[in-house]
Length: 285
Image (cartoon, rainbow, N blue to C red; front, side, top):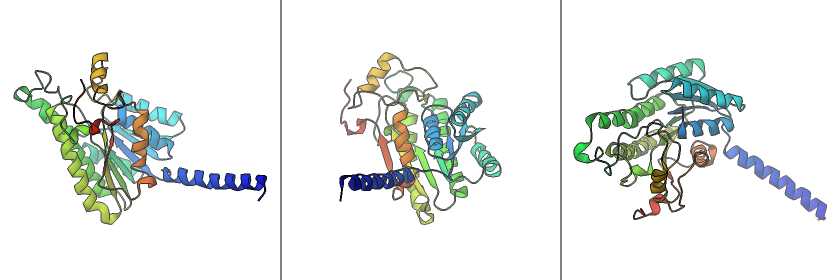
């Protein structure tokens, strides 16, 4: 075989390989609903799903920010719709789902991402177990646990066979974490077993259910939108072997993987995206 023939053969094989890679992460034909999508991880997920070809439905409490996310996706060439809802309000997501089915179509992927932090850690006076406020506990459970449960229950009712569910958990659900609140670690741990249980139930229908467990990420707004100061960033970074907090672009690949054909044999799993934080047996600060 001549040199030119070899080059042509390799180019053809590379092109086939490129197509295969694209197909693995192709979401064309999917309608994806993302809760908690007005900022942070939810926004990052919605943007990458739209870039992969999905019709994206962004859901959240903040109408203005939600509209900005939707319009940004459209401006980038994607297809997006927005619906205002608070998953902590019983029945709120069910109504959104009815509206989406009627106005957009049947969703094939539901990403339960909405969550709140809920008070300080036990390193603060108000976060001590003896001082932890009832309203903080109740609000976190209403959003992170009950809101997620209701989102997943609705998903089980509406998703077609072969659909996918992704839940945003946290590394705080996989171990103790002195940097976050009692309610947060409790709800995120509970979510992981909820995911595993749902995965077992829906596996016969080919519906895959997985969780993603982010470690310390910048700009999530989960703490109410406050900008993390330099000392806070230093403390979080000290818990990460890679030596820094994650940025939103670094959660997009894992979020896409878990709802794409690339993860077709993955269900009931939790993927930690934490810069190695779970590998530590001690804190560094």
